[in-house]
Amino acid sequence: MQMLWELKQGFLKDIMYKMPEPKPHSNTVATILKILIEKGFVNYEVQGRNNLYKPAVSKAEYGQKSINQLVKGYFEGSAAKLLSHFVNDNKLSQEDLEALLQQIKNAKNQDQ
Image (cartoon, rainbow, N blue to C red; front, top):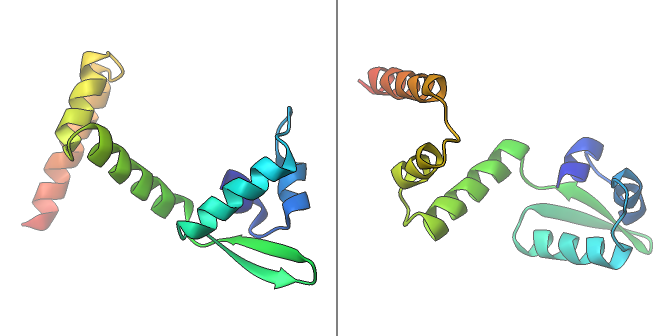
C-alpha cells in the first residue's frame, strides 16, 4: 500500500521498482496485491496484458480500518484496553497521556 500511495497508480513493475532492498519476488507482491483487491483496498484496470493498480482507500482510511481490526481482534473491541496495554508497557509517556486526555476533553466539549 505504501508504494501505491507514493506512486498514486502503477503496474507491478513500477511497484517492484519502488520496493526497498532486498526486494521480494514479484509473485509475492502480485499475491499481496490480489489480497488487497479482494479486501477492497486496491482497484485495478486491465491495460493490455498488464494491470494498472490504484489505491481504493486513502492512507487514513486504511489506518482506521487496521486499528479497528487490531482493537477488535486483540483487545476485545476496547480502545481503553489498547491504551492500557501501551501504558503498562511504558510506550506512552506522561506527556503523551496528558495530550490524550486533553484530546478527549476537547472532543467531548465539541460534542456538547
